Length: 111
Length: 110
Image (cartoon, rainbow over all chains, first blue to last red; front, top):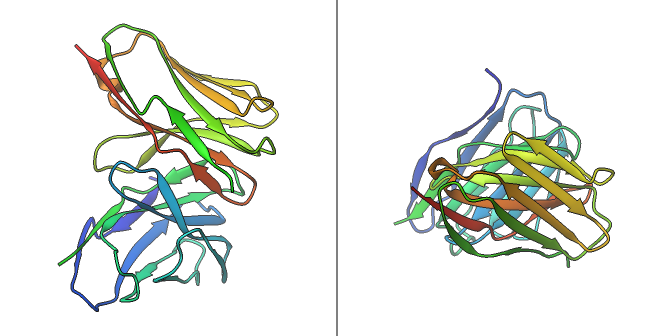
């Protein structure tokens, strides 16, 4: 059953803490993306990766970091430098620059 | 900076009506355009993808068109049903990544 999985579904972060969101895909897609969605707004691109061991900053990369050591995995770390991290985080993948497929999302809340 | 806008922001219609959602983008050098559906608290579900060389795509009751010269795409939903209630987003692809519109929130009343 091919698709994209994200974990955890809900995540709570204390002030000053780093947290890592998981994204895994078994679609054999080359490209993977991380987006942030705030209430009533569209998606904003945080980071994307077109190939293993390579990634580029999106529009709002400050306070976030990523790695792409394996084709199927693209974890996102929300660092303490991100001052307003409460949001819904969505991971996506695509083959080349064609149709994007999304995971179910992770809702991050700062306590 | 590339921008994608969607009109209207919200729409409420009675069941059975045909409706059109609009998506506008500022750069005509488009690679593709994708329409998505998002239910509350969920991820995005791909509905239709139109490549820059195409003018429209159809899937069931959905039809999406693309006019590069005017920077517009429309999503036509025929014979709307309460199950169509969701937020609909369009995304413009430029060959590297995608820029999303803010979405249209659709309510279909039984």
